[in-house]
Image 1 (cartoon, rainbow, N blue to C red):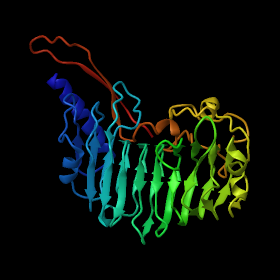
Image 2: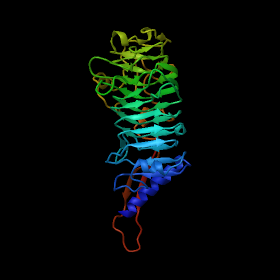
Image 3: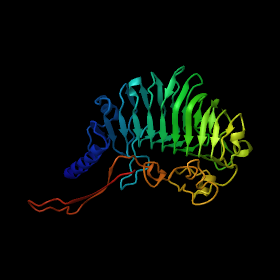
Image 4: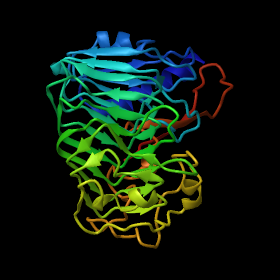
Length: 363
């Protein structure tokens, strides 16, 4: 058993080393997986800016952590890793404090409580392929400018990015995200982005309950650019004004939401399609408000097919090459051990142990 654990850890470390040249630290709170640390906080405390922390999937939730004036890469296995033991790395929440945290990347984690970045805030944070469940992400330090945030390939499950009206949000990109909201935990998906400069929502899926509609925005969002999105039972006009809409499609969003680009002083930039079925493969599940980010959201035909401003389908991206493929968003970009089989569990004296390891990676 010890040799098996050692081989598994060695394989993971070898694969991880190809991902980054920085010092790599491993974390696991499960006795069945060897790692250097059993809490994320301990690994952070031991790390220097530029280091990478790999958090193993575990049947046990990890404890909250705080990152202060260090820029790190923190990698989990993804919100639904496609492997034989599909454990996630689940954490209630975390706090990022200090300008020197700029360029931190959080990828492949599951968060179930509040995330805070509102004291001596850092810029250029990247949140990639995470699952946010029933929580607020606070970016609401007052009277400052937040710059260069990326939210890509994430699941927002009744979760909100919450700003404040006295702050400027500049060069934000929300791309290839799944925004599901029923009103059980938050008021909307985006709040208080009142002073927005180059804030782009591109190729996202927004949907809500199986009946009625839910707002996308709250608390006076303004000056957004909204491009290539699908909206099903989500109203993008309420609490959103002076925003430019290009090549979006709406369905069952109500009389206000179906034509959000001509409401509330918003701007119709062209290519928008009102009140038509996007015809995703699992459109019936979306219409019913079924919250399953593993459904098939591809589009083979219909009004959303090849109708984006970039010639691609409106909605989530399914690029065959590169990292922007929703099918791959369930797992982080870190290579991983998919399976390991011991060929000869009974070993004669002076014999050899034969182990077959299959490794994979997501683009």
